[in-house]
Length: 219
Image (tube, rainbow, N blue to C red; front, side):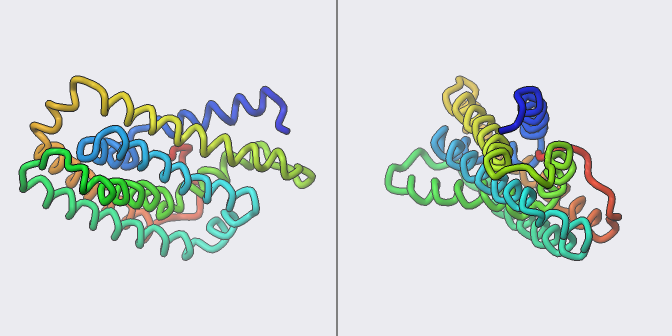
């Protein structure tokens, strides 16, 4: 097990990384707008699963490959940029039509879409692996046991998932949600523009990146 002060430091940095506004927050907000707090929570949980995969890969040494072979990171980043552009197109198209009332028959499809988007946004972001490489390197040691390594992975997953589930629950049950649904076309278009900007930024950074470690942010 990690010493308590080390674990608190790790948890604090993971929390700051999760709370940093970015594409993940936009995805959770969009699915909460469409499918309510359940869809937003599902997206948050699957996002945490994607985060957990990168965290587990990092403690087993996979993230070092991205640092050593930048072309791997570049490939993942470009695939992620294409996925963000696809999401932007979906969001822009959704903004052209009235938001349908909640339909129990389509709830499964909405939850499935939320789960897919939440997971893929995290999984197709290799910067998450480098985030954990920079963070976990402060705590990992050659003789560290599997229990401590598992503790680090679970800490990252639970904090990420807990934060986004909390966001979905608060937004989905707030008085602000009906106003957002009424003006969803502006939300969709704003999300689409944000996704395009981020996708272009990811692509440019991937094609011009150096091998330095990124800033500590997961958003």
